[in-house]
Length: 226
Image: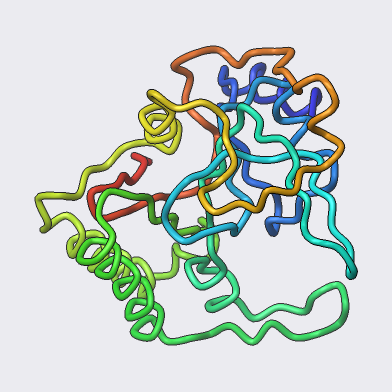
């Protein structure tokens, strides 16, 4: 973490406000580390569809007892989804387990899914967040760029849609809120509630853009500028 932040500062002069883990594969220490280093949000979890939420540490679960919620912390989850990621549907690759990622889906099928999620958000949900993950080496293909242009034009045609960065969206979402469990969370709590609340130790510099290669879109929601 420290080496990565140092390189970003030295080469690009940026301090990331958000984090997107490779293949969305967080470890048990990812969220505490992000909090320690002053990140404002992370975008690797799939705990919902469109509504950001507060990250939680110290959850407890078993096969015989009810789920025990950990403590919410001052780190926002800007959620993602596999069906809104361009790599699994477009790329043909061999994974570490020797299985084949078929990819090579037609752009028409991917566009149908992305637009369907977008239209549902606009028509039935309202002001929320739709995160579409695009890898530069994947989306850059000519026919995929044309599809992406159509998708952007479709969203841009609606007056309720705006474009922004994930960082700015999260800062606006935070206004008037404090870390809390999601509505409907059960009453059982983990041992983490008996410990001191985790605190950010190193704050990221305010106003500096995130270094994420990640696009976000929503009906009445936001899309980051390139």
